[in-house]
Image (cartoon, rainbow, N blue to C red):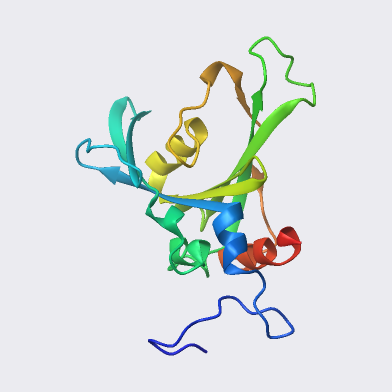
Length: 189
């Protein structure tokens, strides 16, 4: 294992080497943390504040994009620290049509997934963006509401083009740590 102040190589593959390089993380993965804010702050390259409707009220959500800097090359492990042992209990696929008048059964749409952790205590947003992947994590129902209507970077989705598929239970017992191993292993190939 790594000791404090020693360089840490990142996740290890079965051969003992890193699963993916630091450059791969910097070029392929974007990470955000979604949190409730007491008041609207000033948007900048690290933070973005958005308003969401939740339970008949308007809430301010802070999108922390600080981890986009990838200073240590392992942004997802930083982002999900404290959540690696949580179990993915369900997922909801949300499809975004290219045109508002497009029928729902056409296969031409973009999709993203909202993963529910530990029965709804926390949520992860997974979405492709160009040739990369965007991940966001947040706790509580306001984070879930944010993920259904905004991208990981805080950009609003076109409401008239979205349709939510039925929530699916995940009974495999897969943890967030195992999800990251899959992203860093087979998905990165």
